[in-house]
Structure formats: C-alpha cells, structure tokens
Image (cartoon, rainbow, N blue to C red; front, side, top):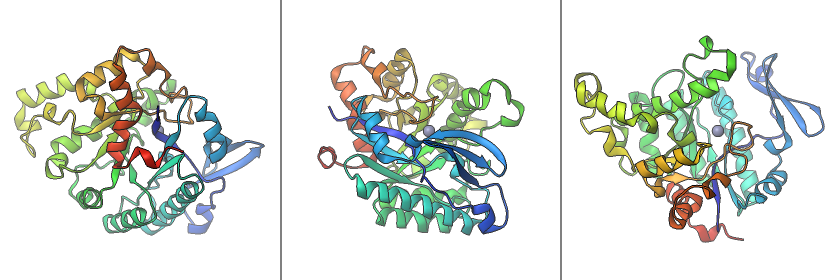
Length: 336
Ligand SMILES: [Zn+2]
C-alpha cells in the first residue's frame, strides 16, 4: 500500500555563511566535523548534531523504504525560517532552501513532494515567493506556529493564506520559537510542553480569527496531531460557550465545527491517542507523519498504526488518502 510520510525535514548539505554575507545575525550554518555528521551552529552556539540522512536524498530513501514508505513530503527545519532577519535576506535564504528542495524533487520525482518556506515577516515578499514556489513545482508551504510572536490570525498574514487558497497551495503549520522557552530550559520542556502548546495556539488563532471561515478551501495540516488542541477541545469549546465575550469576538462559529476542516498528522506515539484523534477529525483528515529524521519523531514511520483498532479503510486513509487530498495530488503519479 502506498505510504506518504507527510512530515519530514531536509537541509542542503552546504549552507552559505549568511552571517558573513549579510553582516549581522546568528544564521544557521553547518560544520561537517566528521564523515556523515554535521553540527548545526547558530552563530557560535551549537544547536544540534545532524546526520547525513538530513541532507542525502538517497540515504533517506533507503531508510524509509525499510518502513514500507514510498514517498516523503520534505520541508526545511523550522530553525531555518529566519523570520527575525531583514525581509530581503530571509527571501534570499527561502529561495536557496526552496530551490534545493526542487533539485531533490527533480532527481527523485516519485519519492519526494516539496513544501517551501516564505519570508513571512514581509507579506508582499511572502506572496511573491509563494507564487514562485507554485511555479517551480512545490505543492505547498510550511510556516511557523507564530511569526515573531505574532499569531497567525493577524491581519497582515491574511493575504498569504488568501494566496495559498487562490493558488491551491497546501499549508503545514509547524511549532517553533516555543512560548515560555526561556523559562523552561531543563528537561527538554520546550519540545515536550512548548511545542504541543504552540500548535494549539496556531489552531485556536486560525479558528477564532476566522481564517478557516473566510477561506473555506484553504488546506492546512498541523504537525504532531495538532499538538494539545484536540486533547483540550472540550475545554476550548466550553470556553467558547461560557465566555463568548472573550472568545467569540471575531468569529461566532463554535470551534468544534472546525473538526474535520483541517488536517493533522499521526505523530502521537500512542495508538489510543491516534484512535481518539481519528474519532474527532475523521481518518480522511489524519496524514501519516514521522518528523523524520529527528529523534523525537516516529522513526518507525507509522508502525504503531498497525497496532490500533482502526479499520483497514481508516488506515488506508491515514497512509495516503488524507495526504493526497491535503496536497491535491494523485497517487498514480507517485507509484513507481
Ligand atoms: Zn517537524
């Protein structure tokens, strides 16, 4: 059965030294300190060590093939978003990363689908790069759960979402720049607590800000099964019911009505939670995801889905139908 992994990250093997080029800022660069490994450096600070499966398209195919997966949706690593940089510099970086992804697609058209990154700090540059992404063959874009701490419902981001709907470009919302990060440095809390909260922040902002209401054809997928949103939907709906004066100020449609309107991936690491997620949004709205190649991801790429009580048809939806619909593509184009 065709399996499309809707959530994976990739980098070019070589990154320009943008700090030197632009003359400011702690941009990410790679130190290839030993064979098959590189250190991601942010300025002089070590960020994380990555392996060749982060940049080598062939090694990746070998690895994910072992888990019966045929296709990966690839996008950059959120730390590369660079929304904090000067807009034209971020555009430069976005183009470099997007062009690299297109090269991977050209070499392996049946094994990869690409999502671009945009300079979201400048709406008109973002829309221009989005239009270019469409032309060069990317099927959508990945954006952060916040843009320099501004929520996704801010009016200045609306033209980007509007253009995504108009161009038929899919959106992946990925948590990053986690709220409260400064105050929870120990125990990997930004990743364990901050990330799920960030994704819920993004979904709530888009629902309450009326983005889905105004753009009914916009196709958005939220990473990590929507973070903490679905497990707290009861609370969110109750908040809407008991304090509409605080919650329903921009959109009077109940949040629960949006279940099934957007997609989430399967990265729960928990069969029971995945069954619950499917119950809430439907199997046609849950895409197989792994967060490959990072250790917090589901690096067995959905093996636990086999252990759930979901029906064969629901599993088929998760393994490919949901992603095909999110990306608006045909499965036949992907089968070798
Ligand atoms: Zn990810």
